[in-house]
Length: 237
Length: 290
Ligand SMILES: Nc1ncnc2c1ncn2[C@@H]1O[C@H](COP(=O)(O)OP(=O)(O)OP(=O)(O)O)[C@@H](O)[C@H]1O
Ligand SMILES: [Mg+2]
Image 1 (tube, each protein chain N blue to C red):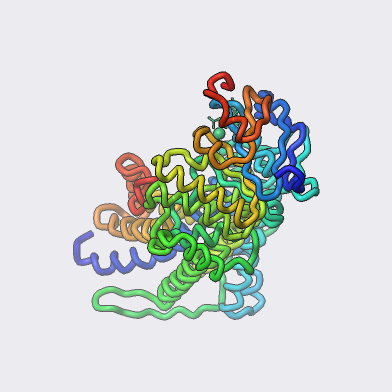
Image 2: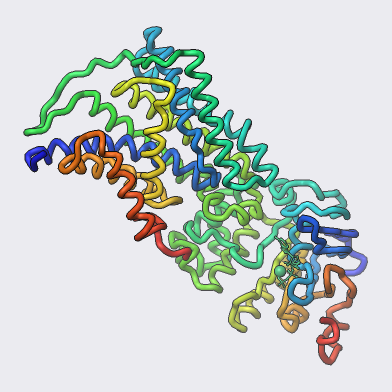
């Protein structure tokens, strides 16, 4: 963790929707193999931060670096090819398309080298999806859809995962499963994870560090141990 | 007209419906992916027809004429997307404004064609037509050509939609935001739908000009059939557009039982109106978002 190379660095990010500022000043970093949680109340600007760090929104100011290289202003195709993946908080699969097609689309930006073999590799990792490969993604259960969204991101073997509320709408046992998977990806495969979460208990369980956001600003950074030591988190929101 | 005419009307309906099915698919592909009410598809159609007429009148064989028309159509469609729609897209223009721009391009383009080629109708040479009979119904080799070419093109496009690039089109169609998150370059996808949809219109333009004639305003009627077919069948559904176009052709012709020929367009609008009232997602589209 500390001492490791920062893989992902956001500095002084400022984002607006039209004339309305949504994020005033967001700075954070994620080290290699680290799970970092970004928490905060509804409308704090977490999704906005994640999207503009990934290239889905153009920030007004600030820099984003991935593996030392500036990536603001790059399109999502370039960023996916560099090894960054973003999984949105809702609508994270193509509902009208087959499970199989969804996985192919997850690898689309990588070109032809991510093809059938990669899809089979994801099916080995998520056998529940393999049984449903021809099924339309919209007919999957919430948990299966979430797994599919992870498969769509992992198919390109990324180094950096940006997850927007991966626990949203899942039953407690599935929330634990998704968090464990995230932890495993970081600790066993060296992926770096930046995860927006409302389920702070669960996020803090697997995270190394936590940033807290309020009204468009990141105002606190703590280690997960420090967070766990608190009696409650209400004063943070 | 009596019921004795039924076999003939069914046959005519199938001929017209095959052509409409191809046109509905071509227009519907562009509409559902780029979300543009592409009125200027009629101009693409017309430009391709004139391109076909020019090479056919120089003695180009019919197969070559189809290829030239498809290429001219594809280029015209791409030019309209790049020159008109893309700048508007970059400025996040309202859909209504894009529609108005599309209408403007059509009117301007028709005026240019009329200025260059004059108002007179042109017919495309190169196909010798002979009559055939099936029981009590009569038809021609030209109608066989229309059916065969339409369904070959439809089949090719259906297959194309299962390829890598076709899957990306379906992705942008069903969820543009997620497509961008996946790193799918939407501009490339728009380029592909305009190329494919406009090439289809080019092929359609030859079929149309062989049956009727090429003239500056020729594109409107097939355009209307195309979007009625696409809406009746269901926007965003490939099968829907095909069946919608086919149904439209059948209904228009069966309407001949009650109505004189040039009132058939009433049937088309009646069909559209009823579908919009009763089942606005289209007859053959999936009803749910699931
Ligand atoms: N497309 C948009 N247009 C205008 N304002 C927006 C848009 N998206 C978000 N906002 C506003 O920006 C602010 C931050 O929104 P954001 O979605 O980043 O919050 P969040 O922290 O992710 O909230 P939640 O926990 O509810 O997902 C909110 O006030 C929101 O209303
Ligand atoms: Mg959010």
